Structures are given as structure tokens and as C-alpha cells.
Image 1: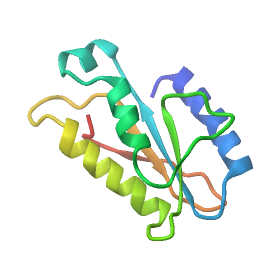
Image 2: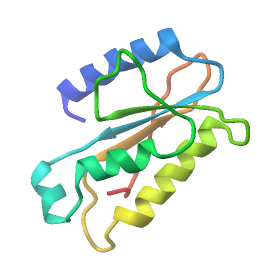
Image 3: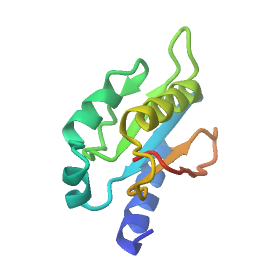
Image 4: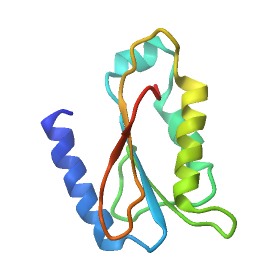
Length: 123
């Protein structure tokens, strides 16, 4: 993980910990090389729109990033399940077999504790 992304991620975690609701989850994407996105015909704006269509998506006022997505529980689904479903959907839609994975996806589901788990082979 590049140092600048790590520092930015720590800052975002700080913001998240200050506003985190009881049942919420974060989905964090480190996009990687823009040229690889183009080579694989993946448009960042399309991925972002796809993620934001899921129920439970909540826009953080402090977050003007296209890399951090905040989800809260819905009446029928826990935020952690929503994030898991998004990751599975992204894998099905964008992962290309026999191609080197690029970018990184992290999720945080811990209440009162920030712990990011990296999910491999999403893009």
C-alpha cells in the first residue's frame, strides 16, 4: 500500500470513527493504475454508480472521495451483508480470470473499532 494512500486512509478512518453509527460498514477502494482500468474497459464512474445503487448507501458529509463508501443497516439487511454482497457483485462483474489483480478493496465492519480487511481479486 503506498504511503500516501495509507495516510489518507488513516485520516478517513478517523473521520469514520467520529461519525460511525452502531450498525455501519465501510467499503474502501484503492483504484490503482488508471491505464489498467482503461485497458480492462472498467470505468470508475460506472463502478461508483453501481456501488451507490445498493440499499443502505449513505453519503458522508466529510467524504468527497470516490474511494470510500459508507453503508448503514436497512430494515431487511445488515450493512455488513450489503458490503459483502457488493464485493461479490464487483468480483463477478469485473474480475478477469488469468489476469493480474489490480487495485485493492477493503472493508470495515467492526463496531467501535476500525479494522480494514483486504479483499483480493476484485478487479
